[in-house]
Image (cartoon, rainbow, N blue to C red; front, top):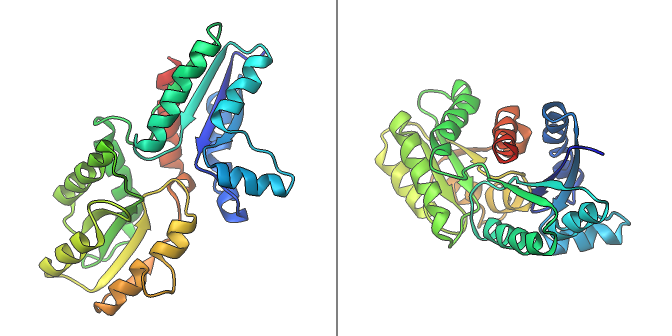
Length: 260
């Protein structure tokens, strides 16, 4: 029997593009943990239902744990591929605690998300700059856009933005649904005496609906359209963080930490 089960957890992937975005980390995970069995779980009930209509069954995290516990596996890691430990991660953690009571014979482990603790902030900031800075002109602005959350750990977006700004004031962090907001970005851009080119990059695991519609969409409410009306030349990069080996390896570092 495999010495451990690793369940990689994302919100969900229902398009060919987003599904292809999961291949890299799965392959890297198999290389890093060759004696473990690797599986997937989606937290989105809607995406799981949509896939089931196409005869594709993907477990929820709870279903995945139940499946492997029923097979007699004793060591199961749930590895979050979320960016911050927000509402979704908190629900994942609480669910795992409940499942531990149901399966006391199992060792259920939880790997932290990308920004799982404050020590991750500097490492992530270095990777964000390393991946994009060489491609930037000295006058270009780079905005990393996260989902945002009313959760208290939305503070990580602010803290990450502060660290990046200290290293390069033309690099900002923003969110779609909380703070820092679009208005914050616009104000900061107007205060910088620099060029008019703005590069937008999702600060999200996958470049799904939020990227294609809310950030890079053609309608008037997208970030691209709103910034263009302000006179900026906007270039959206439609890549999730799971499409970069450096970020995948950091998530897998967190898996290694959890496994001990």
